[in-house]
Length: 414
Figure 1 (cartoon, helix red, strand yellow):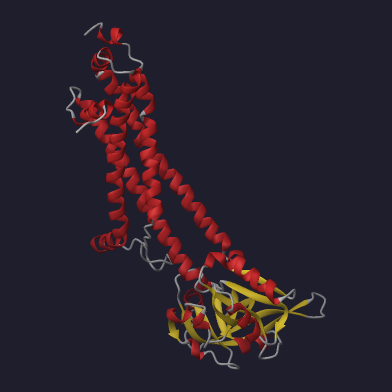
Figure 2 (cartoon, helix red, strand yellow; figure 1 turned 30 degrees about the vertical axis):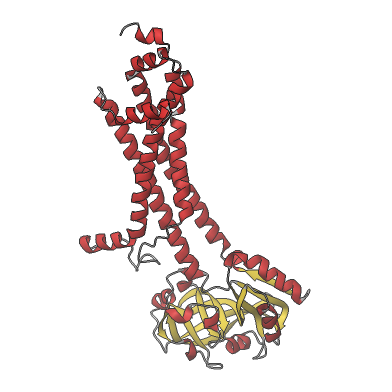
């Protein structure tokens, strides 16, 4: 089968046993280093994707994807919900009221965000019902001032079902300060645990109880909470619905309440990816040292090829083929091992924990007690392209140096 001269000789140089074994060793270490760098990038990016997915599922499964609010409390939330459900991106719309305050129990205090919900409708927009450790959402009954707390809050105050604590909320008044505290006794009827910071900052009460605390009518609510098919379209969808409803309505979405967290996670992934790319770059540019030594070792061969009619471009292509082949094999091996490691990293960590008897991610310290992994083909392709691209760039200078060798100079001392 016909092959171009550069490919034929370049691949043959790669397979040949060299007189200088040190060159072979450097080429092998370059290939191994590139494979390890690609493997590390794929595994780390997959783990970071897994953490981001877990946090997205847990946090955005609890907080509203978007909410439609009016200037005044809504007397009738059903028309707003019906208008929102007409949008193809909206899967559910339920009444929702939110307030902030301080929990007090036996002298200890903690800030808390209170969500007023309808226990029957809440599972349509939230994962809370799936993460109840004690009690049920149905135990929130109007007029009884029951509260469902997060696991972190319950453990901090050492609360059990049936315990009573005090909620302190600010209230406008005509006093000199303009604000006076209002106290409300709450009865613990449930505890949830979603494995996120919301376990220590969120509590749930019944809508009617929230309205009474705010001195509203029992049927009045603050907003309509929406659940969307695509979370990342929340700003556009909620704004469109608010504009459709009229000037008295406005929209709030998760990018305003939780956006900074996910922006920080995205930035962290980008920076760690760039740092790991430096490892790949170091391994790729070891190819430069390999090819420079090969060029010095093959100076006589290059001179003979030139005297036989090979052009400088063909000489350059020979060593570009050799270096690119080293980079291709290293990238391919690293990609295969990286994909296998990313798909089995959770199993591997569980095995290490069993063998060592130590918990890598203790549930007492971390919100996520396992090592999640989400392998994305786009990341794999990007890492492979970066590894192969850097390997190719590393071949240019040594190949150019080889093309500059003059036959008479190279053969003078042969």
